[in-house]
Amino acid sequence: MDDDLRSELADLVRAVHAYVAWHGESGSVGFPRDRSAREPREAPHELPHESFATPRPPPVAFVDPAFRAPSPAGPPPPFSPHLFDEPEPVPRVTKPKIPVPAPPPPGEARDKHVHLPRIEAEVQSCAKCRLHETRTNTVFFRGNPDSPLVFVGEGPGADEDASGKPFVGRAGQLLDKMIGAMGLDPERDVYICNIVKCRPPGNRRPEPDEVAACIPYLHEQLDLVAPKVIVALGNTALASLLGTSMPITKVRGTWKLYRGTTMLMPTYHPSFLLRPTSNLAESKRQAWEDLQAVMKELGLALPQKR
Ligand code: URA
Ligand code: SF4
Image (cartoon, rainbow, N blue to C red; front, side, top):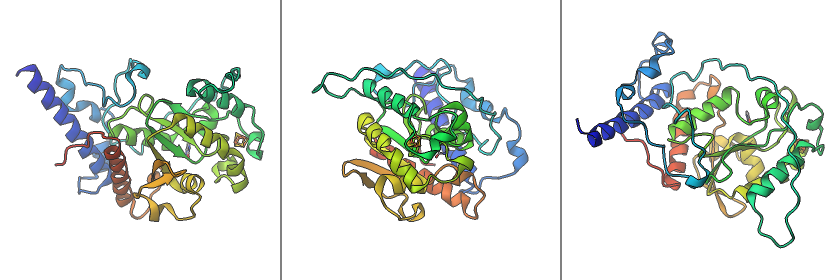
């Protein structure tokens, strides 16, 4: 088979697999949900594309290539059926303190690569609300500050507090799979952060006064990252970013404007998609629909329809 045809066929198989994996997992198109069929960990590695010699190209030319760190591990695998597997425990670390950079001369354009670390350093020693008393680490961001796509969650959980990075626990693993299903790499192609930067004890919702104390950091963060699209994950992100009290179930899937300028798509928080609710399959289908609207807005290739 000639190389072009082989590579085209490999791309097609991968696209179909990502699509089928998502739908199979959501149960929305009647794929067998026999648990035993999901047991072997090797299953995702038995994909036909593994046997193609042509390496997978990067998912999309999405972020300025100058800021693409070469990823030695290669792109992530397609959307996996192991959504409910228990993740590895996240080791507890204490993040090194970021040295506070000197302020730029007055009048100089704000460079995100100077100012984001400045804000992160400020957050590390912040005591503006009671959440500082119980934190191990502050949690500022992960991903690429040059990305046109930002995901905003609620606040750190135990795993995030332990590691100092957002969305590294169970919900984070699902978020990474959702981002992977969009054909994107969570570390290279998107920017991920939260409404509050310190963990609310017992994973409770942040109180309104805690959100009020913390959200100026996020507004500054978003101003500097200046994405084209923000995805608000769940009720807290939606309410805090837009000042609305409409529930996510009503608002999800409809475009909003953040501060009158930036396209914002509200969708379900991945933790909600991990809870056994009566219409979980439908909620997952809706979340995928919302992410596809985001892909369309950003000009990303949509998965092939079957
Ligand atoms: N949930 C969130 O909202 N944010 C995290 O960082 C982790 C879980
Ligand atoms: Fe400061 Fe925000 Fe942490 Fe509260 S949650 S202490 S405002 S960084």
